[in-house]
Image (cartoon, one colour):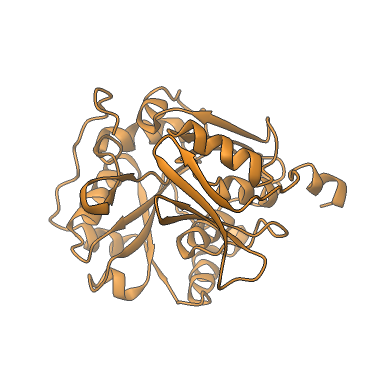
Length: 294
């Protein structure tokens, strides 16, 4: 890609560290103490996003790297892709996607208007139409999607509950939400979920079972310790109607090798491995209701 074309996907970074009032509490921008040149966005004291201004494709959060690997083995860089990011935050994945796929278009959805403006003002996000930032409730936006209107939907939505717990709004976790996403991305698209939860894997299994009701193939990405239910952590779940890794881009073997090369090696469950993970767990069936968005 020419420097001129790549620069069209970037905007000036104007980071101002400090604590900011947002609709949902406070946001803090601070230097990352472990990564020179990187910045962290904290929401109410919890790390939400990392930004590395000079390299949008360098992702500090491990689950974001897993998502990048999964999509990289499905879509070639020149592919024209339409991304819907449910959960805006610092728009790190939108910034990554605009750089990795220069013909792509991105819409982020964030419930907090002041947080959206903070990200736009500080983080050097590509301008519309490359990255559009929409203030709205993720479930409502998902419910309004038209069939075949997106190629990739990424759900990375958490809300704060009692005792500092962060959970996914229940109306985004059921079969109806998965089926709505499946219609929206069509036969060649991908619905990506960042699941975060406790060592008890039953909620993760119920989410995967819901995905399996809507998609022919469900790929699960995490490390062995998480899959064994020994720690709290993340599982990236990807629903597709055909096998996730594209044979022309390295196929399953290349995909597995890329995951093993992570600083903390991870694995992908596909096919029978996903079936075994779900076995005996009924799918989450919470309907996509909008009466209580949070």
